[in-house]
Image (cartoon, rainbow, N blue to C red; front, side):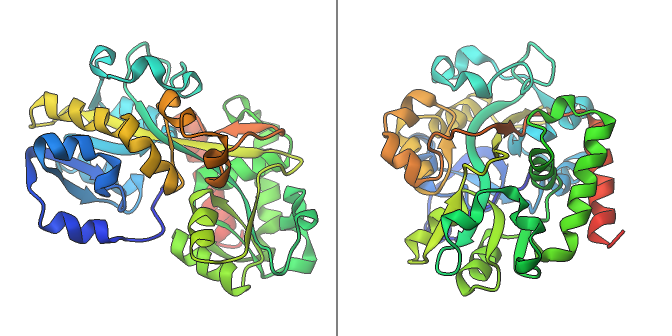
Length: 344
């Protein structure tokens, strides 16, 4: 999945005049250059050099074509393909300061793509659920994911232009909470469900700012979004709801950093960078922007109220975790999703 922050901030301008850490290149989503997310690293070394990509497919192709980075930010669904390509190498867990306090659910065997090696270091996660314009809809209108099939809202609904998020929604809507074990029949049911809601969608949104504007204006009444969207909308004064307890369930996405084989930087800088991201100092700023830290001890110390405000509070419904799936399954889903968007 591609994750971006809602606002390109003053952080970008601040970095323009900051000292740069010699040799460390971070390949990332725009927004993660915010100094508050890795201040301990800046204090020790100055700011790293950031290079941004639009989505992980673009990042992958650029790296295969010869672009060199030292650490790269990807989400869990990409891990098998990146591992198979040979462009990433294992982290040494002994050099991860917060390793023992990482959320155990985020570093399980599935995240490691079937390997005992730590090829993917979780750093940030979030939830995906239904955000809605609370001036026009009430919580009672958003108790089920079948809202996307409601003809009353045709043309005023939206889901991400992202195959992982789309199929997480479709699997939940058709009764599947573990997509790694989805059968052919369950895949077909999820695909048929996505095809069925296509005619009701105003758009497949690609940018959080885009969907925020559509929900805020009332053009879109309800959308399947990342939790950072309602967090930022609420801060801007919009009356927005976020329904995570829909009867069929909700979804959780997970992202982190991979260690690049072709890195030319001092390896110690890479560890200092990810340790800064996982530090207690970074947990608060990340949460304020809608991202949960994988350092569970640091995150829980911020309190249940802060977690709830960020859209990461406890839920009472099934949760589909967007953990890695096989390349074959992901490609099959991607092909079907492109056909659906094209009207087939």
